[in-house]
Length: 87
Image 1 (cartoon, rainbow, N blue to C red):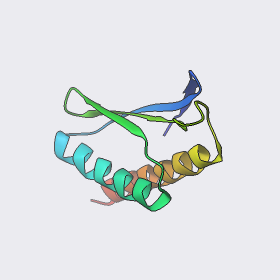
Image 2: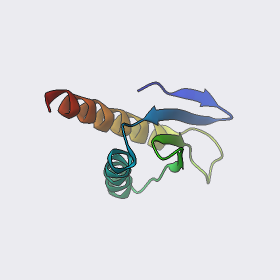
Image 3: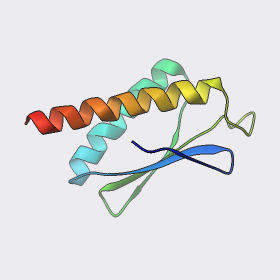
Image 4: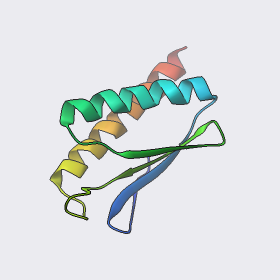
């Protein structure tokens, strides 16, 4: 998963095979975000493309909480890809 920093935000775009897979991954990210009490902005485009932005809205910049969430999302995606390869 490749993250870029733009306008004081971590940003990435991820492609999925279909909308169902995208929705399952969004649920995993939401569960992680709830655990960390820190939530990304997510936008679905073209039914299989997920755009994720992470930054501390209250501070208007990237903080340690953002790094922790980005690392967690990246790990979820790595595990997701590994499971897909094993199918």
